[in-house]
Length: 229
Ligand code: CA
Image 1 (cartoon, rainbow, N blue to C red):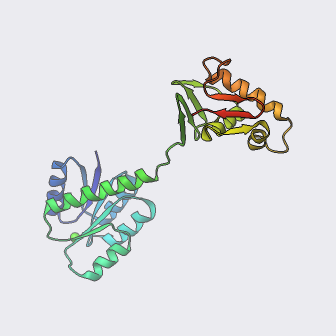
Image 2 (image 1 turned 90 degrees about the vertical axis):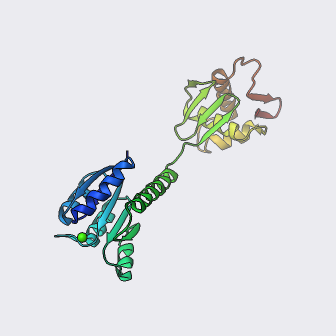
Image 3 (image 1 turned 90 degrees about the horizontal axis):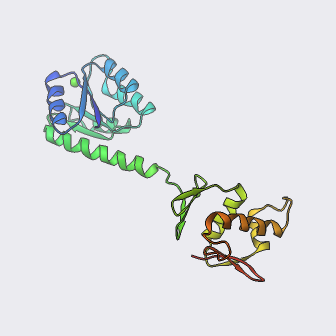
């Protein structure tokens, strides 16, 4: 449930806004003084702030400015002043919306819903999703560096993981052992192309049902390996 803070010194207006928002399923708290509202907005978790402009002690502009510095939540400023300059000032301080009193409570509810869903989308789109490679029952989570074979998680060493991921990301292409060695092991590393053979064997033991008849990593005799997609 989304939690909304109303900072409004006209109690009748604050109560009306609260009633309508609660009817729409929001949890609502009211502060009538600017200084109290600022403290509450900064120290408690809210999903949206409805902020009156003219308030005792600290006005809505100052509250908006201070909250904006610390918190990322939609702020709707309301005011009895129809002055356009006030609107611009309000928006310039980082308010998301501005409403002139008197407004219909249902208009307020509609805007609250619109801003909350817009913020959800912004936050949602900022979330990093894991980079997944999936081929015929093998699932490789590149971000978490985890591998599942037919739903069962298997453990791989760093180089086994890198080699498997590289092959799976380049399916149906034949790579020589030299190419794979250069790709996965840096030039300084000790070892040779026999290392590739050993790692392929280890990987097959973990992903193949029958290592004598590999279904994923095929040996192309005299050339190298190919991951069959
Ligand atoms: Ca006021």
